[in-house]
Length: 87
Image (cartoon, rainbow, N blue to C red; front, side, top):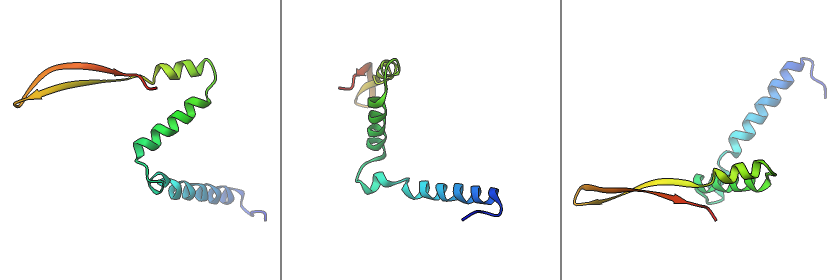
């Protein structure tokens, strides 16, 4: 079926796409995952599909650093920076 006004057809199509995205936005909840686990899974899939030189660049960004501070009796102890390398 052809549209009389092509712009209206494009707008309707974009609206339908937008609606589909809105409806599928929380499938991770239906799957019983947290958003963080879903995002990490997506990132792993994307990294696994990369080819060189992009794979090497992405692997360099996988390392996570965080600062840990032990607290005792309401006082902060010495802070230690930890590095976590994914498997």
